[in-house]
Figure 1 (tube, helix red, strand yellow):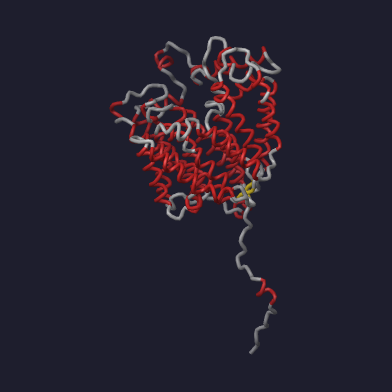
Figure 2 (figure 1 turned 45 degrees about the vertical axis):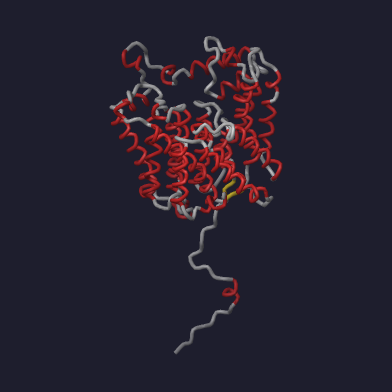
Length: 472
């Protein structure tokens, strides 16, 4: 099955299937369960064959973990685990590391940095579920660094991977469309809107829609095949952006803007020679239309919400509008700064080893029980100096991407993936599959196709002596 999905010979059929999966999730979990295991079982034989490239295995894992939120919406547990992304990604990466040659040696150091904090707990309240909740995210990031780093794929294969991750999010899109109440029945306020996210966590839904919108943007400007029709792809991009903005959860959509700006920056830096050599897309023909679609979605949602969306992205709250609060970083970050500073205080008190994995939420002064939303601060508080080493290695890998590829568009895309991964860890920690998956994709080695010669000559023709024309 994975082979046919990758080949994408019937794009509208695959799009329709995933939209229908989302619709079925509103009434029964069994459609998702059946499709998930159908793809998994029919693909295992092909994927388990050891070959030169782990491309098929990586693609299958990325596709299946992208069902995480849709399976939650359909209540597929225990047939599909609630935290599917964490478990399946960990199993898949361990399999890949055993099965294939790997080059990401720094990932082993990152993994070692996580181990000491597992053996102590200064709060005395950490349960097994807390360890899984907090540790699998950074462990998965270390595993993808080990496995994905410098694995060679082509540019088209990269586009296929992004497309495969968008498919399950199409199901989330159709689910939220059905579950979204009429706009006249919704009172939009200056806070996250659960009604517009299908009744699920607006931050998670916004993050996924932002991710899908960013991938559609990449697919469109690289002229990779999704539906096969630029207008249809544009409508899908609009739908993801529109529904993501309606959640009023800013994190995911800001990530979309960040990734698009990074790619545009590297495109603008490209020289005339690079534009010819790599056949870079014309900004006016491909990039600007895709950007205008996202801007149009913002304008439409702002009109629907009577300007509340603009106020939300300006960091306004009911308190700041009424004058009872002063707009500051505390209000703009909706409490994340308080949690961050609380974690930093814990780190300064326990600088070397931290307070133990999962313990910071119970020891943070004035915020007992509140989970961290910023992975950096959690790493520092719970793992101490080793958490800092872990984060510095991750940053070094990101800086190394500046020399990742001669093609400015591909280089910008890889850097954008990494920055969005890092940014996501600052508003949703590493609790979803998004940060590990994007870090892995950013570390791949993308082969650069050789430019085609205008009039290629075969070897047989080259060996034949050229006949001189007869003179009359």
